[in-house]
Image: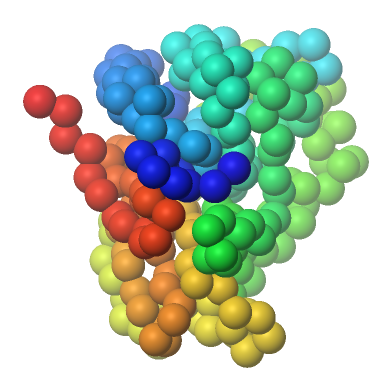
Length: 253
């Protein structure tokens, strides 16, 4: 589907529902629902670019409790014929087929190229891309390993979810504050990744999350790197109107 007329394509990331606690998460979830209700009339497509949940694991016949409002809203959108795309992040990488079967939402595990109105997009969560961060890249390989996934699934949910929530909170504590500062062109690893990709292929827009910091950076005269920020502090999102992709901030009155 193309963005045309009053139809637009929306990009959001890093809701981290479930964090830091149920009460705070519910307030953000309701705010996200209000936003989705407001953009529904103009939405040609919607991209959720990772870390919708602070943690998610699909057992064979069980999924985490809660999140009924956001899951119901996503089902409502796809039932209305609005395509929704979901990219796994580092907090919800253990997706299986629940979104595809129940919500009719495709799930992507790596960056994917799209083209809208003759503009080329490369979209992904952004974790583990670019130089450095070797410790996380090693951990990511372990967590993506099918054997590790299976072993975790053998734990009773009350144990497995408890362990997962503990490490999830430690991860936020280690990466929260320092990641909210723009480090400069030479030290932003997603900028380095984008520049490396541009040596081989042209994209008008690189759209990522993960950094929890809204960024709109010109890579060259015809290409931009957009980081979508988050829905914890910034409530930021990207909107493509068929001509330009713009970062905006949601502030319901």
